[in-house]
Structure formats: C-alpha cells, structure tokens
Length: 514
Image 1 (tube, helix red, strand yellow):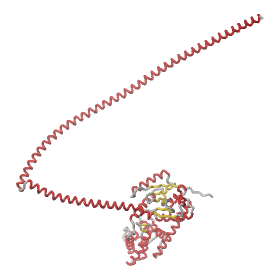
Image 2 (image 1 turned 120 degrees about the vertical axis):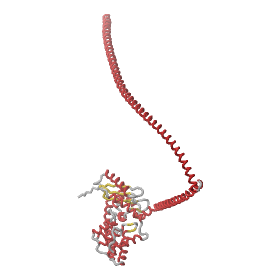
Image 3 (image 1 turned 135 degrees about the vertical axis):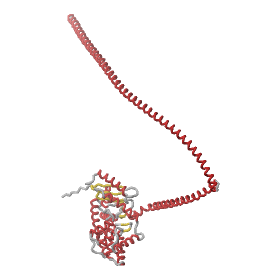
Image 4 (image 1 turned 30 degrees about the vertical axis):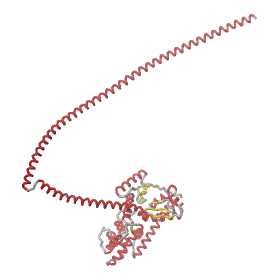
C-alpha cells in the first residue's frame, strides 16, 4: 500500500516535472516569436523612414523645379511689361511733342487771326465812313432824306412780299388739294376693301348641298386623306365649316370649280368616298366635260351659221364659258361681239359670216391663258394659224388690241363690236380681272420651275399648292423649291398680305397581281 502511494507521488512529481519543462519550452518559443516580430517591426519602421525621406527629397526637388519655372515665366512677363511700358512712354513722348507743335501753330494762327480782325475793323470803319458819305451825296442828288428813301424801299419790299406770299398761298392750296385727293382716295380704298371679301366670295366660290352632315366626315376621310386627294386632283380649295349640309368649293378658275362641284356631287350620291374612287370619278367627269365643251362649241357655231371649224377650236369656244374678262363672261362677250360684228359688217358692205367668225374667235386665246403663258392675242392667233383659219380672223385677233391695223371691213367691225361690248355699262369689273391675273402669274411662276408637274392657286390667291415630281425632286430640294418660288413671287407679283407656298412630293408605286 505504501509502495503504491509512493509510486503515485513519484508519478505525480515526474508528470509535474514534464509539464514544467513543456511550459518552459512554450515560453522560450513565445519569446523567440516576440523577438522576431519586434525585429520585423523595426525593419518596417526603418523602411518607412527611408521612404519618407525619399519622398521629402523628391517633393523638395519638385518644389525647386516648379519655383524655377515660375520664376522664369515671371521674368519673361516682366520683361514684356517693361518693353510695353517703354513703348507707351515713347508713344506718350511723341504725342506730347506733336501736341506741343500743334499748340505753337495754334498760337501763331491766333496771332494772325487777331491781326486780321484788327484790319477788318479798320476796313469796316472806313466802309461806314464811305457809306455815310455816299448817303449824304445821294440825299443831296435825289432831294430825299434818308427816312423818305427808307419808306419808299419799305413800300416796294412790301409789294414784292405780297406777290411772294400770294405765290406761297397758291402753292399751299394746290398741295392741300392734292393731299385732300389722296386722303379721299385712301378713304375710298378703305371703304372698298371692307366689301372686297364679299365681292370675291360671290364670284370665286360654289356651294355643294349635302343630304346630311354625316357625309362631311366621309369627304374629309381618315386623317384628311380624302379631302387632300380632292384638292390635289382638282386644284381647288374645299372648305368644310359649321354650315349645316353645305360644302364650299373655292377657286378662281371657273372650269376647275365646275368639275369639282360635279365630282363632289357624284361622290355624295355614290357614297363610296376614297382616294381611288375619287381619282376614277375625276377622270370620268373631266372626260365628260371635254365632250360637253365640244357639244357646246358645235351648238354655238351652228346658231351663228358657221361651218368648217376644227374640233379643237370648237372645244376652246365651249371652254370660254368658264373664263371671265374683267368680270364679264368670255363666251357671252364673244357671242355679243360676233352678232354686233355681223350686223356692222353687213351694214358696211362687208361679209357678215366672216365678221361673225372673226367675232366669235377674237378672244379664243383666253381659253388657253390658264394653261399657257403669253397674251391671249398671241395664243389666239397661233391656234387659228395652226388650224388654217382665214386671214381676216387672224387680223381681227391682232387688231382688236391694236397689235395690227385692221385690213378689212370685217376686222374693223370686230374691233368696233369689241369696244361696244366692253364699254356697255356694268359689263366688266377691273378689280376681278386684276385679281385673276395675279393668281395666274403666281401659278405660272410655280409651273416654270424644273420638277414641278402641276400648280394650283387656292384660298383666294393666298396659297399656292405645288405638286412636284418625286422622281426629280427629293425632300431637301422640295424645301429649296418652296423658297425659290416664294422669292420669285415677292420680286415679280404685287399682292396684299402674304402667300403661302406649299410644295407636295408624292411617289406612287404601281404594280399588278397576275
């Protein structure tokens, strides 16, 4: 038992010894690691100090370089400023020298001026003495005192002044009359302008009645495509407002307006309003109108007892129905001239049939002036020459506007009949004709441009719609084209307000499914 206890004690001490030895080992290892860490920290600290020193040296060097560079720049600018200062000083010295010279010259001139003033005063004194002496001699010679002579001079001066005053008064009276006339004309123009809109509306619009207001939506179409197609094809302005069951068609061209009214009327009756149908009906109505023009011309020629006239001329005679001259219908005027010329020629011993033929054809060129440029006289003569009309007819066309002398009784009869028809009270209105001429000039300017296929003046001449060929003109050129047309209208046409130039490009691609 005691041996076991002893063994246990010994084992305890041995274990305790071993544990102490391990603790000592761990302690030595910890000290070694701490020493290593301490050494490493010292190395890092040493490196940091070295790096900081290097950075300090580098910063110092950079500072010195920068300071040197700024010093050089400062010295250069300072040198420039010194140079500029020297230049300014030299300039100041030069200006001061010039001022000094000018001052000396002014002093000399002033002395000279004072000398001349003294001499002038001396001369004035001598002149007054001589004048007094002359007056004294005149008084003795004329037997008049100075006061009496003065009164005579004043009387003559008053008489002359009265004549001048009368002349001035008369001049101002004439100016007042002219100004009053201008003022009166201005007042008349203002009064006329208030009624010009109604006057133009009565003669430049046609109305189409509708069964119901619902058809207005059909005519306008989705996004306005139907009304755009109508306006583009017909060359008119279609106005759809709040007026119940009514559409207004506006155009200065009576022929276009008549076709437009017929087309819209047929579309309303048909009920199918779409671009393809609109185009189809437009072609149909235009063809029917051409046929009706021929029939109208044939009837007129038959009633006048004329024969052997070319169908194209017959069409143009029918077309005169849709042309006005100074507010007078061209066909009615031509018929009136034909009848009057026939009577005058028969009474004067001429050929009444030739006179009637010349009378009905004397204004035939007016049927072409909407499509072709030039005066209706030249156009009419050319068309009659082309279709072998008699020389009497051609001479009457030229003579009725003084382009030639009348060479026959028939030509003279036409000239007299034309004057009688035009001079009849209420036959013509010059305001309307000038308006139509202006609108025609606008269309001619647009059509004369390259790439333009059609042009329509609409909205009472305040807008020109130009249809451009999409194969010849692109989008950018369309913008330039509108500016060119607008500029030429400004230079060549007299018009009130402004004119809108609207260029439209449309490319149609057509193919067939077979």
